[in-house]
Image (cartoon, helix red, strand yellow):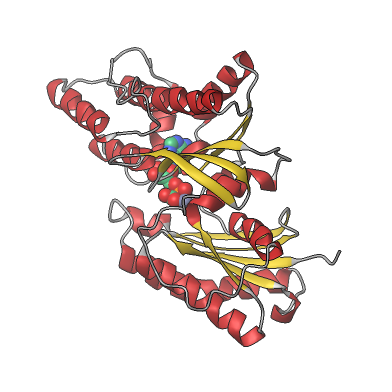
Length: 334
Ligand code: KG4
Ligand code: ZN
């Protein structure tokens, strides 16, 4: 069968990313321009700045990718782009570029849901047997998903309020650690005692797969207000442990209920070493297997977009030039 080369484009938030993936598996190249430095001046992502920076960077980044690999646009078999969910202005840049290229080159255009791309990411590095339970934990989303195949998925539960990454970012802000907060909290937590403060584990005993993190965030705020001489390492370790206990408990409960052996982690928070470690430890006790992507594929990237697109293309998904925006869209529930 002929090799298929797909160009992936991801501009849903504050990373401008392009990648070239062969046959849904082999990452030829994966370029990322992180805007984090710019946004950290404002303590979080500024949507208008994100869109403007995507606009400036996206075409030079595609040109760089092609040049480095001695390719021309016509050598590419299809264009894949993150269509939803995300920041509307930011998505618009990637989608407009992808549509224009696909139209001008007369190549298929495949739009990809951002969350399903995070769920797919681990497949770039591992051979995973489906069905799987996926835990997607990012700045915008916290979901438990059951997936029977790369292109098929149903949501078992999601957050009722803040996403877990968002909670990390907000707690980091309370501690004056800057944006993004996740990696900073992880660093302080390494030196702290996770049992020092008994923060709540919201919804942990509830018989469903939903999450709620805003109460945990408020509990940290109250603790900081009431304990002026707090130990930052202990606060970070205890907060992180409370959030992760809930993720761990509910993900394994879903895997048990559906009798599924393989668990995929995805999204920015899955880059956290402690999270990966507790999932790994628990999996050994109950004969489950954890697949967690390398850090570059946990964070927003275009390789996961191009990789997943291969399977939609193989299933003959038609061109999506009429794509309508729905920035708050969740995944299609099967
Ligand atoms: O997937 P991602 O790059 O973008 C979204 O789709 O949201 O995730 C970014 C989120 C941020 O909230 C960031 O604080 C969090 O992932 N994050 C982490 C770590 N690295 C990134 N959270 C906890 N520990 C980390 N090491
Ligand atoms: Zn993401």
